[in-house]
Image (tube, rainbow, N blue to C red; front, side):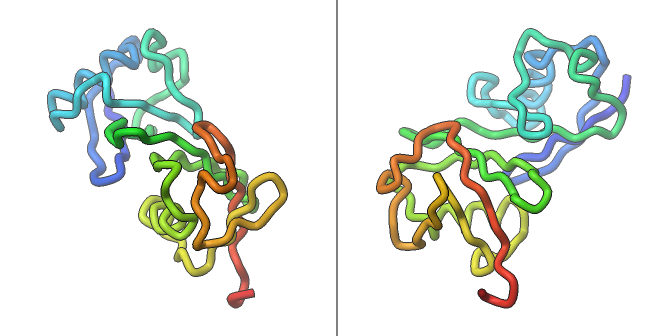
Length: 154
């Protein structure tokens, strides 16, 4: 037995697991502790969605490793991936296609702490304008938006 850190949008928690536990079993442990329905949980490691039938050992998850929990609870919502151009780090966000780019930046700020004012989003080679909607750019679930941090407000 060992523990792992589960990071969610609104909390962080440590849970005791075994390397032979499946992702499904980990989700049940999260449900017991935080009352989040197993069917409303997606778990990620390094931006990759973890499959229910696979074990922690399969993903090489060990003591004090952290996984990300995304709750599937936005009716009509989609998941997009924001990748930081500097370090290629992916962040999965649950959004609606009716969100403005500004709202997506604020959501990213909540997740990663970078100030929304310092963020520039790029999709299909174009800078995304704050007042436009995700749907204006035909952004769909699992699409990747690239993040470039502005330097000195430029």
